Length: 174
Image (cartoon, rainbow, N blue to C red; front, side, top):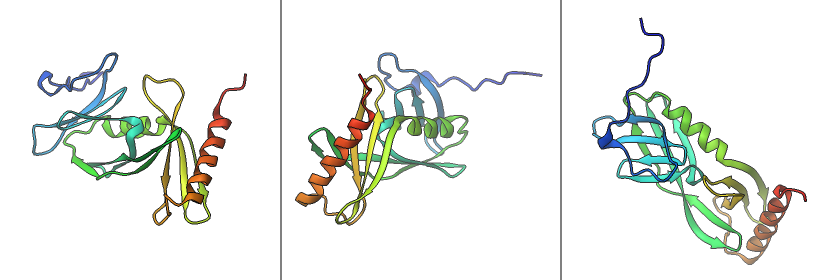
């Protein structure tokens, strides 16, 4: 009887091109393909050798068989923050998910250090400060609710003020 069951190691041929100090924490084969999804301490490697940093994932959902990832895409860079939108959802049917769904959920959640939702004169915005692996401080971004006139001057000014207030509230006291 085996007391400790170890998951098989990630095959060398499936290992993504890891960065310095990056290590594999979980992985799973994708059904009906030779592809794998690999979680590391820096992000999630998708088939095709594309890595999303944990801070670049808006949503992750697990159905019990299928992992659905909604990446964040940069719509606009502004002074001190970026405007993000949802990228195309990618989904993977996982054969033996093991720890992968739990690692994805925990690491995406852990990357969020600050989040608030604010009503605007028209529409609303979520202000988010996220931790980025290997970087000090927080990276700031906003995500507007659907229908918000994102380029309207009053909306931009209000958003700038909200991000500024959020940054100030999270800076360490001297």
